[in-house]
Length: 131
Image (cartoon, rainbow, N blue to C red; front, top):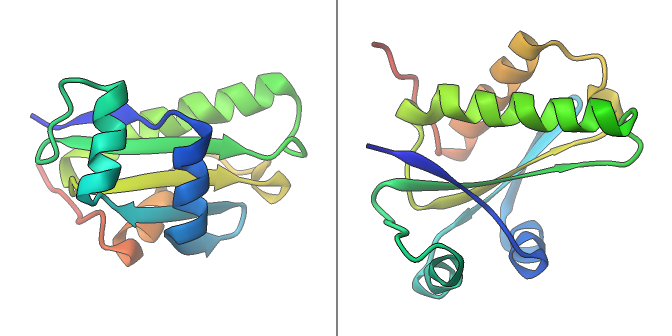
């Protein structure tokens, strides 16, 4: 069964932003980086039971210009919920970071979910999964 592993560490986030492919929609961007052996070892240092064939590594960043701290935390919770919802269709072996800026403030949950799903499809990380 797949599971989501949160991305940790400033260096890893910076590497994803620097070397990853970027995809954007209004208010939300994602950066996607394929897990190589070196990056997998970095993740294993944090998560001893990391399984490349099962675990999906995700991170969330939000601009300080995005509302108040309460609104930023709410968006992080929503994004984690969206990742859990999309989990069955997500491919392991990638590090995915979602980033929100001030333009995404007024977006509703369904709109954010649809935009994230579309961006993940474009990146090749997600395929529609029908139960």
